[in-house]
Length: 188
Image (cartoon, rainbow, N blue to C red):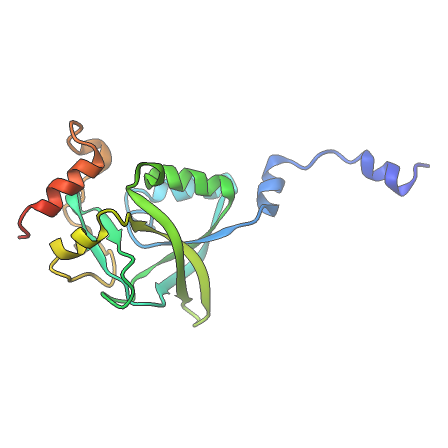
């Protein structure tokens, strides 16, 4: 008979899925195309299938924040507390590997969005700390001005009407260039 230490040494290593399940998770508030029923939700479904994300529930921002649409009806949450509305969205628990994939989608390294802390209220009333992808500070004020300093309480199908998927947008301009053109144009 082996000792307890010897028995432990004979245990097979944990499967990658079990390691991910035990990995620390970050709560991520989604408010736009990552929500269920919208074009980028497939990424969260893939992450969930791989054990890198799980749905926590419906949530609303604790502070009022502007939610606006930029070029191609792309949604942007602006880090301007006190302006706008309490924005409705969804909360997910995401592993570090899942966060890397979300950061890539959101263009964090390209200054499209930035992942910053946010307080959200769950449907049952609990307030929790999470992160959200905000419009990058380099153009957030310009988006707010371009929107007439009016935002939306939710990125709904009606608000998203006219959204153009990334693959269907003009490819000759970068996304940041598209944002610059949008904020310099007249609002309709």
